[in-house]
Image 1 (tube, chains in turn brown, red, orange):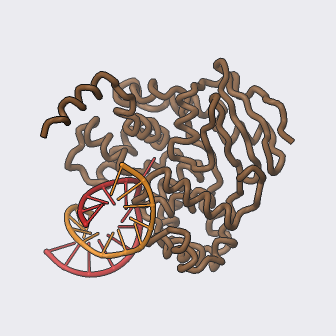
Image 2 (tube, rainbow, N blue to C red):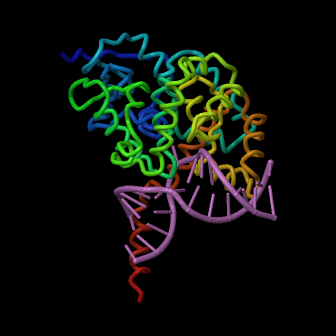
Image 3 (cartoon, rainbow, N blue to C red):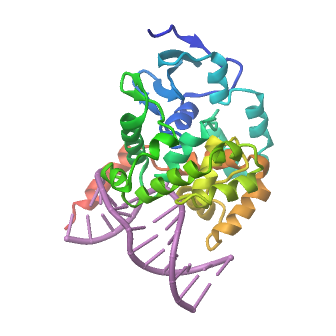
Length: 303
DNA sequence: CCTCAGGTAAGAG
DNA sequence: CTCTTACCTGAG
């Protein structure tokens, strides 16, 4: 059933850390990190495993529909346009960004299906990454196609529209339940709405997405960046807010001013810059300094 | 028991 | 257009 490992993307710049951030760092919730530098995930209706071994990325099919190497390359943005996009970022004059790029070599934006990404980020508000992952899995398992090995496909919005608000609340969505029901109903009345989004220029697509209940500026940007191939989209979440405030000295700036800054400073691939800064900010202080921890214990013993 | 977490929507100034 | 606040729920 499982196909043999095949090398992929030999000619492109990759690293284990960059890959891990890409797959399980928060832009997708379809991947799981396994021991031995292996990740397993679902690409549309195919279960795929990736492995990092001796500086080489390999993949194999592990369930569901067959999938081509070409599809994997596209999904992982393994082509020359990525290399060019990174080079076009203003790292030459921006040492913060340069630092972030060097910290996560080969970090990229996945090209995920837009409808699937919309569900994920519609449910993401005020939730942690593990919570979002768990909630999405629950929905996929309930309504999505069984791909074997506890993997399930995204059900599609027509299936999601079968959920009532109380169904959705029973799944643990809380106040996000009305977003899901509202958006599912909206899409049912407007066939082709999501398909159209991809073809529109960024500004228009962003405006259109915000017509959906529960989709504000941040979620719309996430959907366009991760599911709409709009690399100029610059989602401003709490992490990016911190990065801009602390590393770029933008305390007191409004979110609107920050969006404007990002457009001008980072340019047509601002979203890619965002991903590097996001990963950098989120991983600050994640390395456990053992010695520092010891001294903390001493201090905390006083009463 | 209390606070807070990948935000959005609604209302006020 | 900026600023506040409520909104569900579960984890720390």
